[in-house]
Amino acid sequence: MSAGGSRILSALFIVFAGLFGAAGVAGAAIGAHVVSDDRFVAIAASMALFHGPALLGLAAVLGRAPRLLGLAGMAAIVGVILFSGDLATRAATGASLFANAAPTGGMMLIAAWLMVAVAGFLAMVRRAETSRQPGATGSVPSVAPNIAPSIAPSIDGVTR
Image 1 (cartoon, helix red, strand yellow):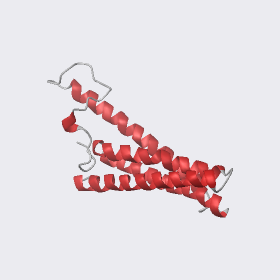
Image 2 (cartoon, rainbow, N blue to C red):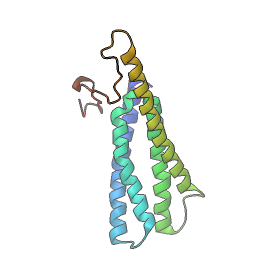
Image 3 (tube, one colour):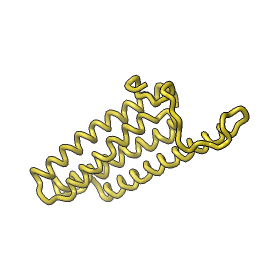
Image 4 (tube, helix red, strand yellow):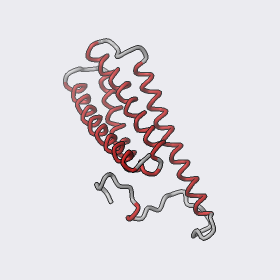
């Protein structure tokens, strides 16, 4: 993936993180003040709120494994829209988005998290291989990354 493509994807993840955060807070308010005892609203709100910050994290580290983490982020976006959207639609109208929308969204969210885990594992393996090469400092590979300020993740100039 090109640097421009990573920047666009990173920005998209940030946009959806904000939208999911707003939708989650709005859903929690509706569940608390408008629709009493509706578990669909509470679950939809919590899923949106939970995955908003996850998308911010993916945006921050997207450059480490752009294809796999990009795919994970897109799967998370679609998964939240299907899962939370279906539950919110059921709460508001009594009807589903379409048959199996929530389970499909849930499976996409599980797949997204597994892709994040695979990306982390691959990064750990690559780091271990790099530290074993001749001239590398230290003979034991480090599992915890040592991120110097000059190579810290950057979200389009927001952090550096």
